[in-house]
Image 1 (cartoon, rainbow, N blue to C red):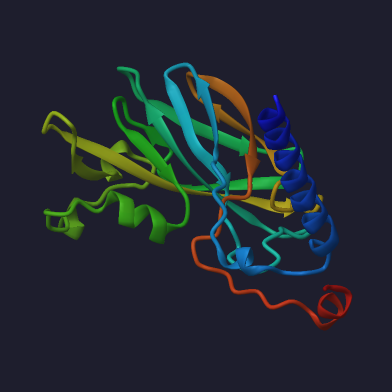
Image 2: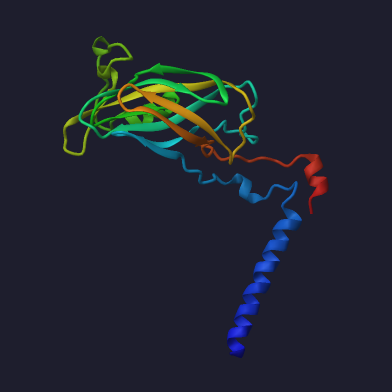
Length: 219
């Protein structure tokens, strides 16, 4: 019994000490954890046979990371079509944005996926490792399912992965990291689905220096 009591007391002391350390030195001070990439997972939702994965707002990759009032916020997510028929992204809207633009492919091909995000990110995912670029003469309208990039599926059959860019225009209220913003995706057949999107983690390491006021107020 004495040994057990000592263990419980020791654990309590450690917990209290850690809490006091965080409370005393957390405010106005940037620690070495500010150079780490936080593990922020995107949202997930489903509409019929369509599955939305890793959905979020693209991180600004600056120290503030917030989207100010009136700014534009590009989205990043993957829409997978697990059905046997094609569907189409009709529109995107949000109560916290004046409007939204959708550019590129809107069709979600059956058994494939549509990548939404900045072109540089989508190209790195779409580009197959051992295939040559298709001739420019084979390119079709960006709204056609034929404009998607071909890759090899798990069975060896060619699968077409599409790409689009969706940007929320005129953010009405500031969106900070850790907050979410409701975004509604409306599909031709699957209908609407509303997802609360967070700001994704930075894609680069951020080395943010504390301001002079923060240094003066810290320990």
